[in-house]
Image 1: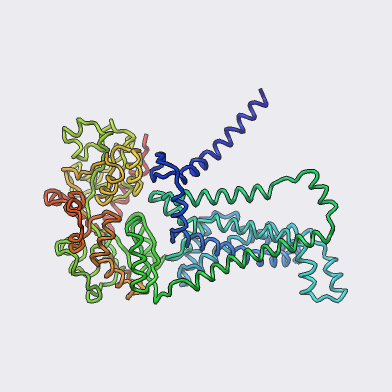
Image 2 (image 1 turned 180 degrees about the vertical axis):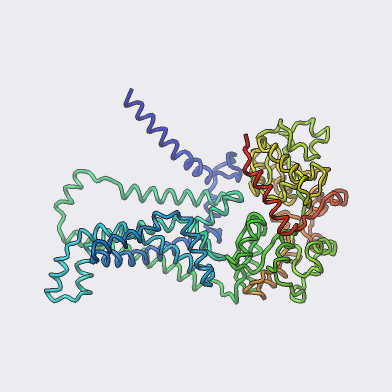
Length: 632
């Protein structure tokens, strides 16, 4: 029974560790984008993986940074070990303890400290800052593997080589280096592994357009993972598994006996072959990088764009680069509140950004934006007058912003999962349904302070721009009382969860609704009768913009009717470009009430207003209470 118990225990451990990986591998061959819904076997995601330029760029950056960081940190680590070994014991131990600090220190502290240091000395976050961070982070791991070999080293061999006439350099490369090589290789591999696996250091030290696999996957996870990531993760797992199998494969007794009688000549030959293969691999890798650089498109400049997740047709970026000659460094954010401190603190320099109405008003008030020279945006004539007038509510005289998309906030519900009586009674047309306990665990709320309070304040009959603390307290109490029946507070994940029938009700932006209905015909969208938010997202130019001409070219390109149509068809968010709307061939789409609601809906919707620093602090204070409350 003891043996059976051990086997069962081992089986459960293996199952626990590898079942998630098995699910991931199966998903990478699933023809459906919806997790848990099998639609047939396919290799499409692997094909799309290698066609996905952003993922390939992230992979390239990951390998280049890891190779350079591990090489430099190994060289520095070797030099440090040799120097420390020659020092007095007390001094050497002190330096070893200092060297080990990055390993013992919390990685988030190291990453944040690097970011503050770089910004403080005026060094802009870029590829270089990431590399510096990785080298510093990897040195202790290289030292950890090299130092034991240095301590085991027989110095008499080195001294004998000097006595026989060898120069110090020749003696080092002929005697010392071969003796240290096992530790150096181990240190290199350890540093390489740590660099590839790192997320936090990279996240805090990278600039616009610099992504590694870790930061790319993190970005995708927050907005809903694409199947290409399943394929990438599968390939990474298989590669690591094969390497670990080969490294840990135990030779048979016959092989061990053969090794004992192996001659020095054979050992030397095998080392030479291994070294040759290593050179071929690295020359091939860097040859491929150089080839890609030589054959890459020549750009006249760059533009750093900061936009919402899944908020542009990728083809549009390629078209912009082809037609204008500017390279696009494209980054994504999830909420206005996430974007603002990055711009305000100057942590990263972006040229053109796409915030929402109230956040644009805040950025104008805090002098974070440049006025747009309309003479350089001739395509501005295609933006409807009514949208420019609406934008003037947060951007007086339309000096700083050019509308990109617009829409409403409402409820998406599953017609097959909702109670038919709630549809017949009209409860589905009210925010009240989100507080009905019969839908406990089936409700998704937006993890955005203004959108969450829009729901509560509208239900209570108050303004979504209220500064009345009594009203805010009531709204806060309402959200806290609702929390036990809420499945989750999310952002873009509402879309994926609703599509795969993982929830019955969800607060969503109208732009997502048509896409979701195409993916799942059982879904329906409604703007509650009590009122809601009508919003505008617009392009603005950052005050510290470094590529003004490119930023203006980008905004003008986004206002081109054909480009605006491409974006509308891809992201399905309503376009303020009236010329683009006229180009929509399908009349049902052109007059879609979700994408282009009538006056009866818009009349009961309100634009978010920036409430000043006092308002921000007030809403954040109450929002913190909602987050800190128990969901039980």
